Each structure stands twice: as structure tokens, then as C-alpha cells.
Length: 261
Image (cartoon, rainbow, N blue to C red; front, top):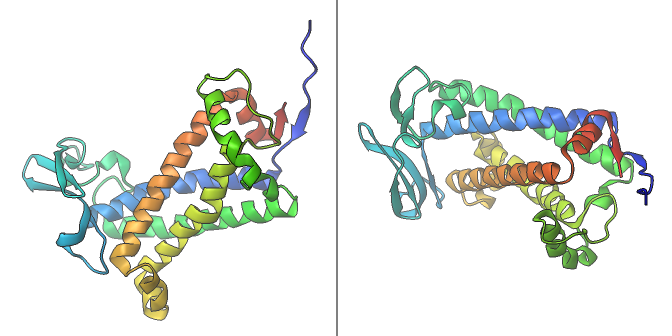
């Protein structure tokens, strides 16, 4: 018996596709430049100011040639990976993150800040364009997780893990995609943008209540870093879903707009 004919859906308009790929580039530049900035002060404190007693994360080199990472008071030796690693100039030194993960690769705080600020505005603009275009086309509501989608989350995950032959019924986006998009678009992305503004000395000077809402600049820095980790996890999950749901079809839809169902 032959398979039923498959239909083509114009899934992504041009502006959505452009904003998607530009945002992807901007995101990785933001991660790299953010790690460059972090290297200048490689610790995170749950406090309104720098406070070793309330330190959540610290990456450093207590002695030459020795790198450590301390997370919630527990210290791990991470020489060669974190703390004492590549300096971007052919050698090793006391750097929290290695040179290959930072922009620029060598230690340059002012350069990292310039890269970060420029691409932060690009990423924010792409996010807004994506939201506006999706809302204008009436597609945004298809991406929001609803109460009726919650019981379908595990069956959908079981399908991704090959524990289930067929996915639960869904529309354009499956329940896991809706959960991820809802969290990232309406919680994590705004949190990263707002905490980034709260970290700016200029914004702190003219709108200090914004910084105070997050518990001070050190606390805002902690929230900002945590938001970056969540976005990286979302990216990993997103790539996993693309590979498990047909790489060629998924990539075609995001390049040409056409998706085959």
C-alpha cells in the first residue's frame, strides 16, 4: 500500500527566516563576548555587591598552572578547561574560560563589551521582528503552550526518544516546541534583555529601580548568566529536535519557508 501524499506548507515568511538566522549569529557572538566580559571578573555572587560569602560560582587559578571551579562552595580541579587554560596567544594562563570560547580570543574587556553591546541590540531587534511578524500572521498563538498541551508533553518526549511509535496529535507545533518557545520568548529572552540593561552603569544611573528589582548589579549579573545557560540549553534541545524530526525537511523550511508534512 502506498503512503498518502504529503502536503507542502509555507511555514516561515522571509522576515522570520532572516531574523532567525541573524539572531543565531548574534546569539553566539553574545555568548563569546559575554564570556570575555566574565573573564575580567570570573565569579557570580547572590548579593547586591561583590561578596565572597555569598558566592555561587568562581573560576580561577589559585596558583600558576592550576585551574579550579567552585560551584556552591564545592571546588573542582578544571586545569586545561577552566581557570588555567588557553590565553589566545599560543600559551596558557589564568583565564576562566578558554580563548576559543571568547570574543575576542585574547583578553580584551573593552573589546568584549563593544561586541556585546552591538550584537545585543541586533539580537533584541530580531526577537521583536520575529514576534511582530508571527503575531501579525496569527501564528504566535500556535506557539504558546496551553493547558490542553501539558498532558502531551511526556508522550511527545517519548516519541523523540524512540520510546513511542507515533507522536500525540498536534497542530503546527508540537507540545515540547510550544513549551520551549513559550519559556524562551516570553520569560527567558525578556529576562536576559532586562538584566543586561540593569548591568549597564548608564542605565543604573538613570533608572536605578530597574537594577534594584533584581537585587543589585551582582544579582542581575547572576540572572543574566543563568539566562544565557538556559538559552544554550534551548539551542541544544532545538538542534536535537531538528535532527530527530528530519534534518533536511526542517532546514529546508527555515531556508526556503516550505515545510513538507
